[in-house]
Image 1 (cartoon, one colour):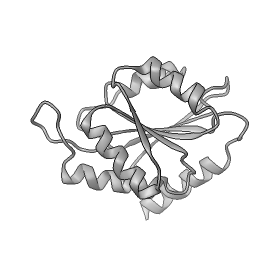
Image 2 (cartoon, rainbow, N blue to C red):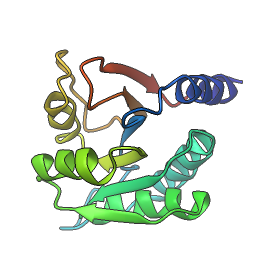
Image 3 (spheres, one colour):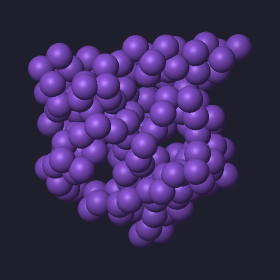
Image 4 (cartoon, helix red, strand yellow):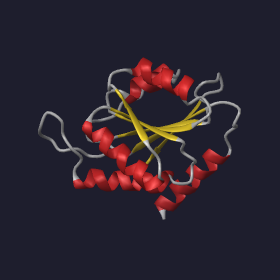
Amino acid sequence: MMRAICVSLLVLVASSISVAAQEAVYLIRHGEKELTGEEPELTPEGRQRAAHWAEMLQHVGLDAIITSDALRTRQTGQIVAEALGLQYSTLPRGDIAGLVDVLEFDHEDDTVLVVAHAETIPRILESFGVAEDVSIEQSEFSSLFILIRPTSTELSVIRLLMP
């Protein structure tokens, strides 16, 4: 029931956005990861979460998926991309300015999913002018941030939690 409500809300938000500028940026953290290793992979729970993200985002009209170059974000992005019939691209995990440039210049008319990290999501939001202080705990993987009209002066931000 809660998932249906979240999906309905996402569709409502996505359908009410103007197409004159970049429609929206959806921002999630990678799924749950292994706790060991230099380049940890997703756990089975993390793979399941990525599949749930794909299900929740299937009707919002994504045009592109961008992940960091970390294995766990690439795996999350790949699961979503395969489910939605999209390609994904990667950028270095700390290159927030590069990500903003790619979003503003290469995807200015697109609806984009960005898969990032607990440490970089607040910096990405800040780079788009989000004034509120956002923090993400290391154990939290359920936040979805929706930046509506991120390249305009009328930025709106919605934060939803996956049930």
